[in-house]
View 1 (cartoon, rainbow, N blue to C red):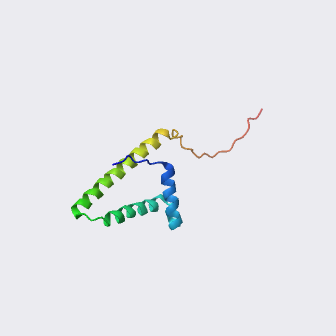
View 2: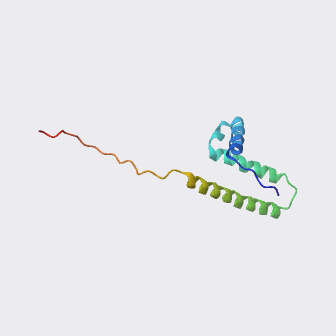
View 3: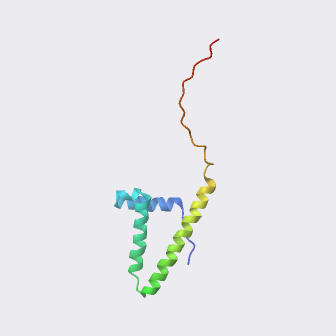
Length: 98
């Protein structure tokens, strides 16, 4: 098996292609559903026993989780530190009398 060359550009290009097909794919959730459906479609066309397909689907699910966790960790490592929440205040300022 070859090493995958995943990049933000590749993912963006794929999502743009999906958006050309369906504008709703600008939503990452919808785009993800399309990608899962494509995997299911490709796997469904393969001549193999159901148990083998189920095993492949299980492995792909675990792989997706691994990639998502890895990307999340990378994003968290480069994210700016959280800022203190802004608190609303109300009051009237009056200058001191001399």
